Image (cartoon, rainbow, N blue to C red; front, side, top):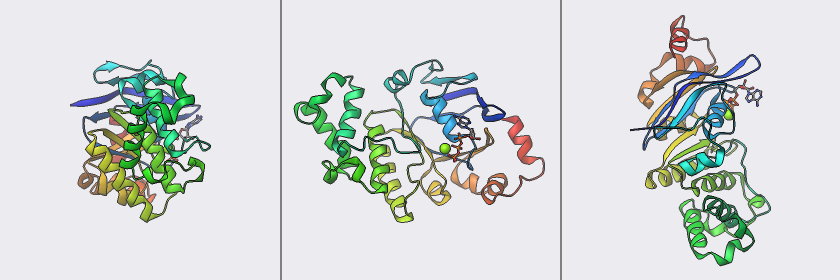
Length: 261
Ligand SMILES: Nc1ncnc2c1ncn2[C@@H]1O[C@H](COP(=O)(O)OP(=O)(O)OP(=O)(O)O)[C@@H](O)[C@H]1O
Ligand SMILES: [Mg+2]
C-alpha cells in the first residue's frame, strides 16, 4: 500500500533544480534509503514533504490526501515526522525533557510545559519508554548539550519518533560519528522503527550502511531520481556505481533515465 506519493514535485533555487519533477512513492512498512551525492536534492525533498519548504509545483499525497498546502504541524498530526541533518535539540534541557517536550507538543499540552517532568505521569512513562527503546534511559537526567555526538544523533531520532509518526524521515542519522557508532545507531533505529511498524526514509551517505539496512534504495542526482530498487538491484546499477565513484554516467543511459523520470 502506498503511504506517500509525490507527483511532479519541483523546487528551484535560482538556476539550481533541487527537486525536478520528482515522483516519489513510499510504501507502508518499508525501510527506505534516499542516497545521492552532496547537493543531489535529498534534504530539499524531505523539506518539501515535511512542509519546511514550499514547492514551485507538484503535489504531495499522504494516505491519499493532498497535503501540499498543509502546515508543518498539520503534517505532523497527519503522521509525518522528520529529524534534521544538523541535530535540532534543546541543549539546555535534559535528555528526558527533550523527548517529553516532543510528546507534549504532539498532545498539544504546551501550556503545561513548566510542569513537564513531574506532573504528567502518562507523558513521563511514555518519555522513559521511548528513551529506553533508544538505549538512552540511563542518561535521562543529563543535559542534551553534554551528550557525545552518537548519543545526540540517537536522541534527535528519539525526539522525532516520540511524535508517533506513521512516516519518519531521518536526515543523515549517522553523520559525524565513528563507524562503530554508526552500526550501533542504525541497529537501534532500525529495530525500534520496525518494532513500532513505522515506515522510515533514511538519508545516508555510507553505502555499507545503506545496503545493510534498507528494503529499498532510491538514488537522487541533480534533483532527479536516477535509480530505485532493492539493495541487489542498486548494487548492480552502473549509473549508481558511476555516481558513487564520481565518474560520468554511462553514455546516454543515465541521461535517458533521468529525462524519463
Ligand atoms: N535554501 C536554499 N537556498 C538556496 N539553495 C539551496 C537551498 N537549499 C538547498 N539549496 C541547493 O539545492 C541543491 C540541493 O540541496 P540539498 O541540501 O537538498 O542537497 P542534499 O542532497 O541534501 O545534499 P547533502 O548530501 O550535502 O546534504 C544544492 O545545490 C543546494 O545548494
Ligand atoms: Mg542534505
